[in-house]
Length: 202
Image 1 (tube, rainbow, N blue to C red):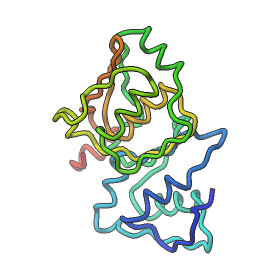
Image 2: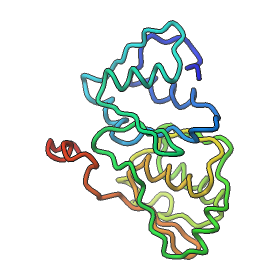
Image 3: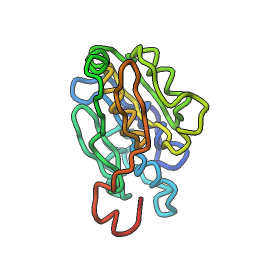
Image 4: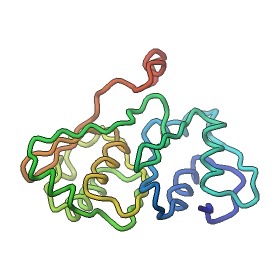
């Protein structure tokens, strides 16, 4: 998967956009997700630039450069490729309180091609509501989502359930499935990596 244009470095202004746009439909990985720890890494002074040495770098080249020159890691959690750091939880927390609604979501289709770069809940929620035909909480333009991380992920042919998982992973949220509605909340679990907790990097 080529990055689409010649670049010699990844930086705060181009990294996430380049990688998400380069991610193409394939039979192995259905979504590329920048988790909050990975996007936060770009605010650290030492990680503001990553060199790319190939003349025509690919998505794989870019990911290899990120993992070798920053604290960003890559994990394949089928069917997602996760870019993350030690502060991120790699398993989404989805609680099912109403099985018929969960079954309906599992049988639904999200978008053929989803591309969200630094998008907040108010932007993403209508897409979830429309495609999954289920009410989403919190309501748009309310304070309950102010502490959600902004969503940065690209996906192809996601099911409704996979869309919920990708949303939760990208924004560090949990979700609970009630009758005809899904409620997202901030994920308060401790960091997945005990070293991250010890250093206070949350």
